[in-house]
Length: 130
Image 1: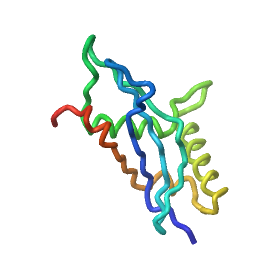
Image 2: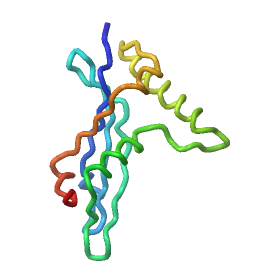
Image 3: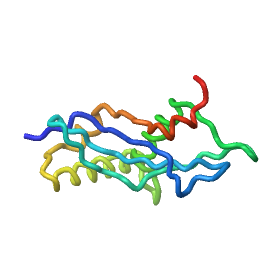
Image 4: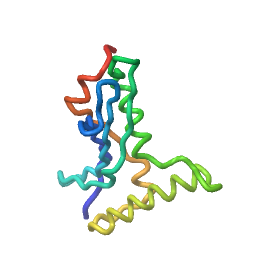
């Protein structure tokens, strides 16, 4: 049986949307399997950081990691839905995506997995000293 060991979000600079003042970051969420494979769950997420006029934004690794987890996590409630409902939908959607690829996992198991964030070298150049 294939088992999901952890979730991993890869964050990188989106060069096509980055300017002198704005750093655009793309985020890709993957399920890391115990057999060494990784399966992409989300690859359409991201955010932007804006610096002061004439300066590029700078941010800490902790801020980037925290934001990456939020960006690939459950969306904020809308249309009268609660945080809990949005979270249930999110985790069920990810579990369904894995089931379609032959990985049988329950949504609540996914929610409790460790979640690592890997910052690309390009993104690390934007860090402030910590």
